[in-house]
Length: 390
Image 1 (cartoon, helix red, strand yellow):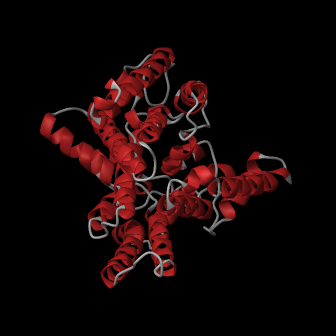
Image 2 (tube, helix red, strand yellow):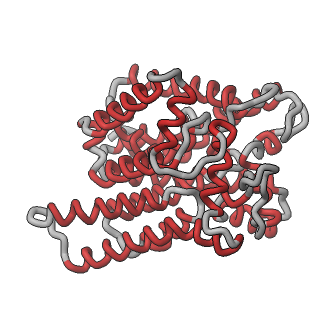
Image 3 (cartoon, rainbow, N blue to C red):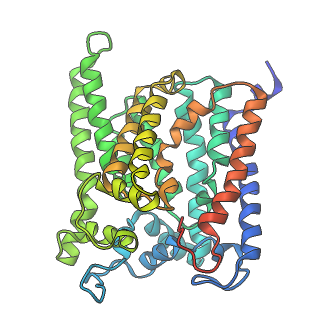
């Protein structure tokens, strides 16, 4: 047995996480030092000011003053961008930490994000170990920690908190601890959108277990629990839009608010599932190439999902990944934040981690770190008029 194998897994994950944070912090500090004056910060801001730009400002508004009871309107009578687009889980936790410690939002927000990111790294290792050997699971954690968008894990965004509860939900699902899914789903669904995707994954899980009941036992207790948890997940997926509608008096308050963000591209339109990606493809790429490239991307994803590397991750991770991508195709308009929006597919990094070549693994890590720099440059750093929000 090697000396490395004698080190507890959680110590190795901790070391990986700390080294990755040193790398990512260095990248963010370098950009902060070069940051000109902008709408959110002064020139050359400190780390915590730099880390609360963009949607971080919206989370600060929620933490400080909650949600508007009257929807703000544009001059032409449409719902304007407002705080209802941002779910309350993350700002509520930050607000509690602020009240306990006296820290301002910038510092508290980063602490909460980093804490949940670390918790996700630990849970992700456990999730990967349900399907992969120890070394491969550990390398999957490396990829999670140095992924191109990993800087988002240490700024004032809800992504790391959502990743934590998503990983917890997947681990509980894979290990068949259905009752414990209830509080985990509730916390996840109040952190970021995506609850309906998990409800779909649960429904497909029930169907899978029913079909396989001849070879894989599906006792009555599990049948009842999975159906009830699936129904609960569906209800939770609609809870926030319902709350927004009740508080504001507008049944479409949440969807109208979300549509405000795409209005800068295509104007104000009614929400029609799956149309946003066609509109986006035509906006970003000259016709007819946009829809063609979109179709090729969907086919590529489908082919990737049937590769041996993805199959080794187990059926539940595949069901989640397919369900989430379907959900995003149904509700999202592609823009510069697309890669961040797709972050909940990160369990598929377990497929990328499986080749054991040292050259391959080193190359992937280097490429990921270089892409971190590219993402911060394109999406986070503000250079004059910026139309590429993260």
